[in-house]
Length: 125
Image (cartoon, rainbow, N blue to C red):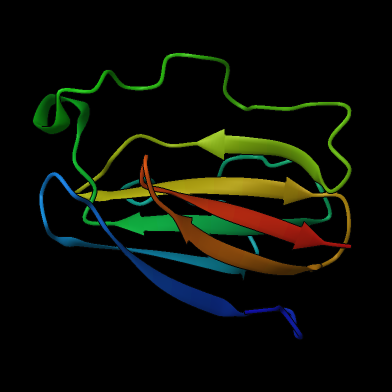
């Protein structure tokens, strides 16, 4: 699950205990951060952009979980590989995040975790 060229796609599957259905997530390098349903790309700081995509996601109204209401983009000056992370709202049962990275197309790994269900993205510089 490592990036060895300018564009790669990794797909993973995870199950949720509450709905017993499969959720898929993918990650790939993109040339611009265009959110589904939008015509223009968001400006992302960094030398490369990693798109994280979650398929079959519930909206806040469907899940009963409040939508994220914090800062966007997220950034941490102490983060070694990541410049910033842009979060996008659910659109037609899909959710995207865009990660601006400090280097050109570093290798990455996407891992499914449970309790709570989530993914981890490791960036290897």
